[in-house]
Amino acid sequence: MPTPLPEGAQVLPDAEAVARAAAERLLAACAGSGRVAVCLSGGSTPKRLYRLLAGPDYAPRVPWERIHWFFGDDRAVPWDDERSNVRMVREAFGHGLPIPPSHLYFIPTDQGPEAAAAAYDRTLRAFYGADRLDPARPLFDLVLLGLGEDGHTASLFPGKPALDAVDALAVAVPDAGLAPFVPRVTLTVPALASSREILFLVTGAGKREALTRLDAGEDLPAGRITTEGALVWLVDAEAAGV
Ligand code: 6PG
Image 1 (cartoon, protein in one colour):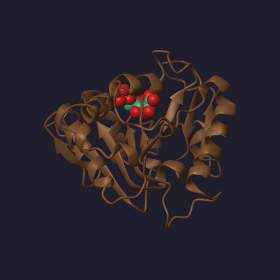
Image 2 (cartoon, protein in one colour):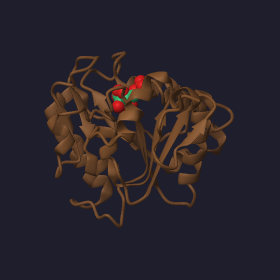
Image 3 (cartoon, rainbow, N blue to C red):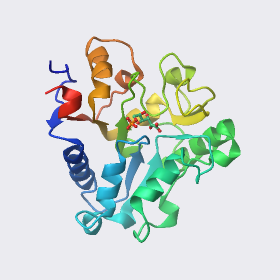
């Protein structure tokens, strides 16, 4: 039975097609000549996209020198830990991309979750150039997000206080309640929502239940993400149940 999907969701044949569609949207988000702010997601789904961007089809087309890379969340572990999103992105990007080191904004997890969240909050405001987000001027050009099987996104988990944070741009999540069982740092709903475009990448049959619950109007974290810009769901056939 087909999974009910968010309005306008694009259904693609497989995970590779989802990654390619996302890569094309990233290139489109880089149109123009100014700086581009991209917020990366963790988890396993976006690895294909990151590898694709670093590979021969896309690397020559990506304006690396103009893009600033942020993280939507990370696990409070050292950057070389196998659970770290920094490590995942580093491995997927590989070496040799012309990314200026100052354009990589890792969450400073070595400081512990609370201090790391406060530091990242300051980093985001400094990059943005103001203390308050103006809806007319989004923080990001593109935000990538995944969908957890319980409906979480970034490290915004159902029923956890981080979900309701309104003033902070980044907060600590002491107890994720989900593997890997380590504290997290996550951007908040207002920070993630402040984007010209938000792209959810959803692949695999394991995501059907969360999509169905979202469609039924359940208050799940992924459903809290709305934007004045474009909200795009790229879903593979397995997740879409077709
Ligand atoms: C993380 C995430 C998280 C992820 C979802 C989906 O760091 O774990 O940012 O929100 O996107 O859990 O994960 P998968 O892509 O592995 O299914």
